[in-house]
Structures are given as structure tokens and as C-alpha cells.
Image (cartoon, rainbow, N blue to C red):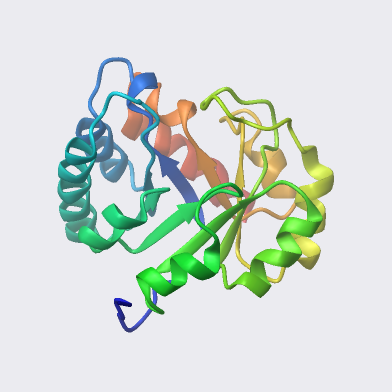
Length: 219
């Protein structure tokens, strides 16, 4: 049974912050999300790669994050777990090339939820639009070790291609840091996914304010 919602949200520009509790210096995902919101982030994705965290624990976390993001007007995306995204009424779900296919995800979530798809090559970007994805992740731009199954860096050639030809909103991802986000922006990216640069920062809110300042000065 499809769950239909009206007024599908749009992917905003700016920092697309991704949780990673194992890399958060002992802070919980909820603590990290509160700091992300305080730093003015427009998008938060819940991504949990710890194998010992139960479905129930993830659901409880996502319910609280949904409450916090709803109150703050922040877009909330759930990575991989379509069932949890539906249960907490997230704004969207993000899947990879080896996860549930986008058309099947759409059958589950209905027309009103954003679906993001990770892509690593021009052919995948072309296919994403035909499959019905609302935006694509493009990367990894630089080397990254935030998950076990990461692919090799694609560099700027694929980002340049996606900006010119994808026909969908783009989220640049993979090894993006404070020192190189300006370079990524100069290649046409307007939405930037960051993990360790945010969750590993001593002061998450202050780090986000610094990143937002860099982006604002590039426009």
C-alpha cells in the first residue's frame, strides 16, 4: 500500500549533514543532531552502520530526530531503511546502488517522499532520472573511509559531468572538508554531504557556521 503525501519537499542548497555515531567522539546521534540544528544545517540524513544497533533502537532515534527536525524546519532523510523512513514520516529516503531499486522504493513510499540515489558514474546518473529518483549523490569526490563498502574516488570529472548532464539536483559527497569545500563548489556543486568533518568536530555548531560562511562567500 502506497503512502501518499502532498507537497513533496525540495532539496535545499547547503550542507547535507550525515550522522555517524561511531565517529562522533562518544556523542550520541541525538546530541549530534541537536548541535547540527544549532549550527544552521538545512538537511540531516540518519545513517547508522553499526551492526549491533537494533531496528528498535534506530526507530526510536529516528522518531526523536524527526521531532527535532520538524520543529526546526530541517529536512530529514533516512539512509537505507525505507520502513523506518515511513514509520517516522521522514521527508525522504536515500538508497545505494545495491539497495532496494528506486521504482520499488517509490511503490512503498508514494509520490510525496524524496528518494535519493547514490551514483558513481555517468551511466548511473542517466539511469537515476529514468528510475524516478529526486536527487543523486555524486561521489566519492575524494577518498573517504566512513563506511566499509566505499568505492574508489571519482574525482571532479564525474562531478563536472553530473552538473552538466544529470538533470537532477546533485549532492556532492566523499571526503569533503572545510579546506576543500570551496573547490567542490567551484565545480558546480551547491549541496554538500559531510560526515566526519561535522560529527568529529569538537564544536559541531561552530564548524557548521564556518562551513556556511565559506559557502555564502562563494555565491
